[in-house]
Length: 124
Image (cartoon, rainbow, N blue to C red; front, side, top):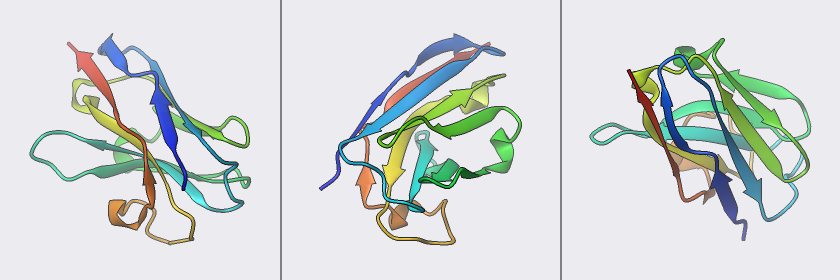
């Protein structure tokens, strides 16, 4: 069983920055995805970014390209640096991990392990 612990959520004004971190209870397996998702009430949980452990490969949702950066900081930790934040970025953010490969990284149903979520609020 893998446990994920998130930190870094909070409130920020539009145009500001915020950094999220997710620490796993195990070393991430090579080439397995660790992703960030977000969800607001009444909407589906959507993929924000993913990195494949040990590879440096990264993908992003179109809505955050150029503003967000996902990084694997060590064997257990993945962070999400969020810059130029917009009010529409406000959501509950979750980190997620899966133990098998899939080409559809942004499908929430494919992930085995989830963090508890951390709230991000961007005000104007």
